[in-house]
Image 1: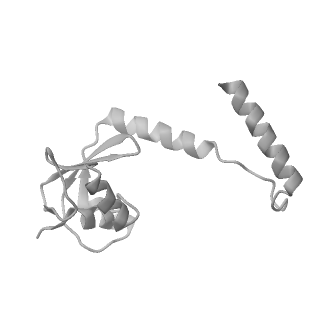
Image 2: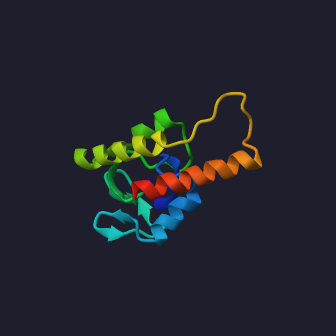
Amino acid sequence: MKVRIDKWLWSVRIYKSRTLATDACKAGKIKLGEIQAKPAQLVGPGDEVTVRKDGFNFQFRVVQAIEKRVGAPIAVTCYEDLTPPEERNKYQVWFIQSNANTEKREKGAGRPTKKERREIDEFKDLYDWETE
């Protein structure tokens, strides 16, 4: 059984929506073997898919072609991750750093007032200037 590559990328949870998967194909970020894949291109078991996402190159081998989105534990069984370890480590470091920089506010403090918002913005501008 073969299935459209944009559907497969969405169903195994590589992309959050089918539209994102289709757009990635149209932008030339998806390769099937060595060829740039179009959204309607068919993919089946044994095919190798290269995905360029967030500046990283991920490589997968299709184990099972599915059309419908499934839960994460089932989705992982539908492909084999062939991504080189150095690329995977680079992605994990980036992912951890991007989540570590989120802002926190004390529980129960509510939303900042207009005055507090201005002070926060001034502080951020000052801090960004000093780090450059």
